[in-house]
Image (cartoon, rainbow, N blue to C red; front, side, top):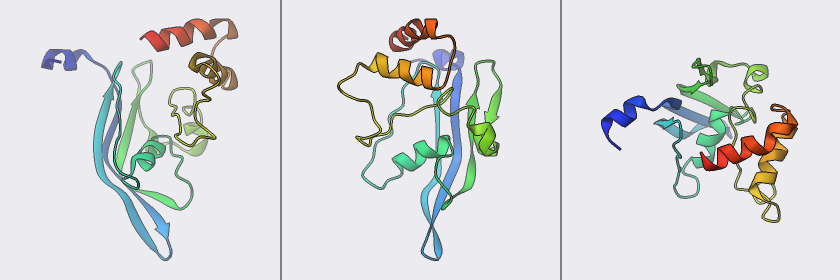
Length: 151
């Protein structure tokens, strides 16, 4: 990819200097420290590392799903909506972040009981998620899923 193609791509997610800690015993333990990355439209990002390195914490941080024993020490999580509006997800209250979870931002957890079911097609399961979140008319689910899979 050349420099020009990067300029033309739309940045849909940007993590800046994100640090997160968890309360353990009587102290706060830092789980991730000052991470930075961006995801551009049409791009895939893999987060790899050994167990306990912060992969899940990083992913859960984006949707503010860390729970009450966690705190954001620093950072910003910018998300660009379809309309071009950029919002810092960390500044959103719980009621506001719920509007993004599952509708605009989602993740597939690696736990066997909450991941994709190998007995059902991926397309069927994505359509189920659209229906669960009432995203658009039911008649458009198939074409929307097909568009996402070939995009």
